[in-house]
Image (cartoon, rainbow over all chains, first blue to last red; front, side, top):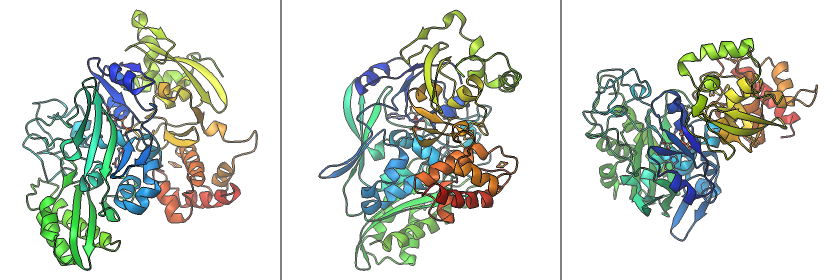
Length: 327
Length: 203
Ligand SMILES: Cc1cc2nc3c(=O)[nH]c(=O)nc-3n(C[C@H](O)[C@H](O)[C@H](O)COP(=O)(O)OP(=O)(O)OC[C@H]3O[C@@H](n4cnc5c(N)ncnc54)[C@H](O)[C@@H]3O)c2cc1C
Ligand code: FES
Ligand code: FES
């Protein structure tokens, strides 16, 4: 790690002030930040430790939303009775992620902002447009088995690695943020940026802006929801492909459906066309497979990751059929 | 032990040399010089030092540390508590697992300064005098290790796994112990040890 200044403010107001310094960044659980600082991938001159700030560690229910404080630990949210009963996809996406120790440390705010696990991004001896804008991408002609097939660009094919954000993408989610310029609300779909020409820009937050809450609009889609994750080993691994599926059924017919895809895309991915194709249809393994094929119709594959298309399609089928058992 | 800078022991020399390319915490003592600003407020300038009070196994230690020093380095290099191991140093193996306020965490991804005010328990703090913690005894009895390098982390993780109520079945134990890798592959005996200890722990 390079030397950095460290400050641990006592209130959110103080944190926002401390973050106004040039290059200052927040650290919450530190499980992404310290890892990448040790690798010299991130080199912030100043860390503002928000991990212990008061008032951001609760999950609350309002009339129309479930509101997550940005500092709720993954482990606590995963075990929350409301999520387990009414939004199982949001609980499963957390306990199927990382390890118990990491889930005890990591916060929900930090979780949605975790960085790609692309090995070329994580190793400063390779070229990476995300790490060093304009330097090139060694993943495109390299070992790209883990990389994205949806939402990539000529400059970057890294996949978004997180799980919870994929479940959030399947619901109507918003993020509350605060900076010296004041408070604002960002639609979750606008939080993560596709690489396009600027892969170094990974999220829409301004410098020094802090996420305070994640709000999921209450919905009957929650009950019959699931998060289905496929990985190289049975536990403690990132997704090769994952699907958050949520359903409202009318008998055998799909009344409403949501599909979030993970492990396969540059950002937490919502498969809207696939959803539209399913509405009003009977839900069978065949219609589910058609939805999966629609979801991956625009997939662009590289030397080693073409397997993610059939795997992703099957994962859509598994997730939908498993969500149906809860409807 | 309260001395923040034990003499240049062989262990410290070796570990400093071994981590030379990654300068970081172990070499903090030679950095800074006049740029070093000491504060008492839990804040530090880059290259400066920060006063950190760590409560480890019931004892309070006051250390002056570069903010880059991770909790595992503070434990091992500054407090001489070498029971906690470093495997990957990147959150991937669990060898560095300790309890922070009763909860299992990775000390390689925790900054020492961020652990200020928390109660830390390491493998050295688990036994009751000469009497091993039931989990330690069960690991011995079930031969739940081979080289032993992952064992302190496994044991701390296992104690937490039982206390969390995540040791209900073999499958649940495997899932909730998945953050602790064992390169010797002692997994089968680790599951047996946890099953045994959980009854003795009253769970
Ligand atoms: C070995 C390993 C395995 C893992 N496996 C998985 C997995 O299977 N699935 C998965 O989903 N994740 C996995 N993770 C990633 C892990 O979940 C994230 O590292 C973690 O959730 C990040 O949260 P944090 O609080 O530790 O964030 P930090 O490391 O503190 O911060 C992460 C980023 O977010 C910013 N930030 C943090 N909080 C805020 C805020 N409130 N407002 C604005 N910016 C903020 C920081 O500046 C930083 O850029 C794994 C991590 C490791 C090390
Ligand atoms: S040394 Fe901390 S997880 Fe491997
Ligand atoms: S006993 Fe050797 S690594 Fe586990």
